[in-house]
Image 1: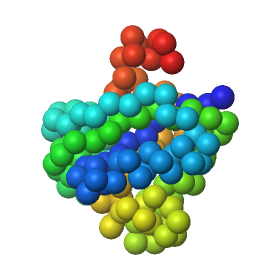
Image 2: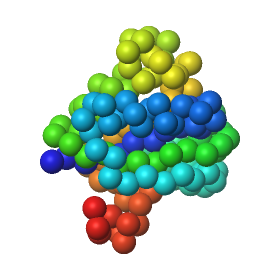
Image 3: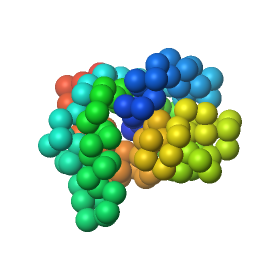
Image 4: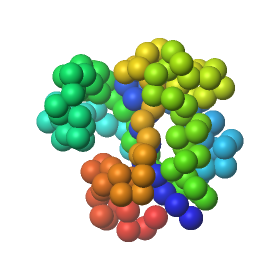
Length: 139
């Protein structure tokens, strides 16, 4: 059984699409094992996306991720990382198939509705960034 980290981003959350996205997660067979709603501060967003700090889109990404609430989640299932990434679709929502979450709920490469870890080490880091050891202990 594998776990991965996922976010319903501010665009999808504000549009009222969190419930539909969670329904798609459950329909896919992935299990939602932890979730919390929060509004990232600038410092938190910069910390989470520090790997992109030198990229030209970093400032607009931080601004976007702090504009409203997000839903941070831990998903579980066989091959959860790959399955979640397949369900999300490509990063650029304008190029994502319409049957993917980004194709359905996203509008651009940045406002793409969801985030997901890309590897087991990334998932471990991202889960630990958003969920404390105490929160993870009972999962």
